[in-house]
Amino acid sequence: MRNVALKLSGFLLAGLLFVSCSKTETSSTTTSALKDALTSGTQNLNTAMTEIASTQAFQLLGVSSGAVLKSGTTATTSYTTYIPLSLVTGVYDYKPLKTNASRDYALIKFFTKSADASKMVVNLPLAKLKDPRVLREYVASDSTQTNNFTMSVTNYYNNYNSYRDYDYINVADITIDKASAGSLNIKSTVNPTTGTQYTSQFAFSNGYTAKYAYASGDTTLSSFTLSKAAAVLYKEELRTIRSDTARFGHEQQYTLTIGDVKLVRKADRSYAVYLKNVLQTKAVVTMVDKTSTTEPSVCHQREIQITFDDGTVATVSTLISNSISNISTLFTSLHDVYFAAYVVDWIAYDIYYKR
Image 1 (cartoon, rainbow, N blue to C red):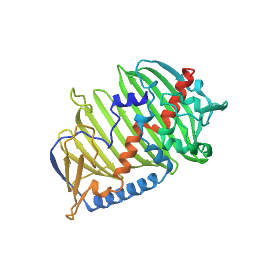
Image 2 (tube, rainbow, N blue to C red):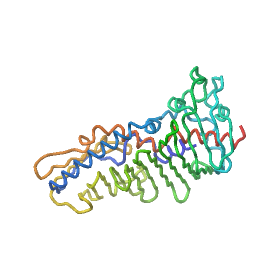
Image 3 (tube, rainbow, N blue to C red):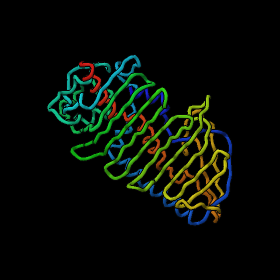
Image 4 (tube, helix red, strand yellow):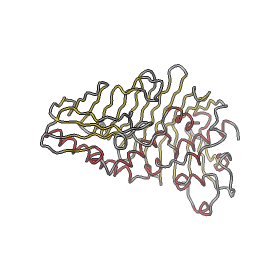
């Protein structure tokens, strides 16, 4: 269900945020302090992405086998459900079945409810999540695998009337090999009148937090943020106004923040550059938009180049070249969260329909 809803809300993208055109635009501003701050900010971002990419949680977030994971029963739009957390509480332990079941086979048949609880606790082998193609199949290694992955759902709500009218919440703590791997927080609301409100956040156990947010309407706001504690390491934000021909409408304002540096492009194509929220006035900023029909990325569809007052030139894609692929993976994964949401949803649907 969530896969369909997110697709219809415009969340299956492989990059970060923006709208495309095909112009090169220039404005002026810069100081050596700006150069130092941008260099420091991109270095901190690269360090953060290296540390995030080394975690097992990031590897799970990268699971994107939607076509394989998708359940034919729960992916249709001709059903309604009302599933609060109270309906699905308990401890559910994975137990292998010697079967080559289809993907529509009830997932709960592979689990045993071992105890009552005030939350929903799902225990299963990590390997099953890393290779979801065999989630409903028996493989020889199943007999030796342990349930070393735990998802403890502390808040869950699934009220689905149609793909244009639903509420969804999934808040959970993730444990791998008995150690905390992070926490997930998804909230999605679609209403025929008020539109779409969606947030998806994952807080890693090493202190980093990634968050995607989207709110539709006459003015649509979308953003992707990577932070540690209260410090924003990276943020892209797009504000557009409604258009009959483009999902994200006409760009009203685009903002890129890396550490203490913030670049803003307004609807009139003018630029503003800030260092610690102080407007800078001595630099040359050039932005090149590449033709695209999707919501582009700063590194793949939009290039930002800054010429500093000492004559040196830097481009964002070069400064964060080692992080681009991982940022893209993290951004995309926050839309779908295949590794966790679908396992929980499947079990919840099976309980609801008494399968």
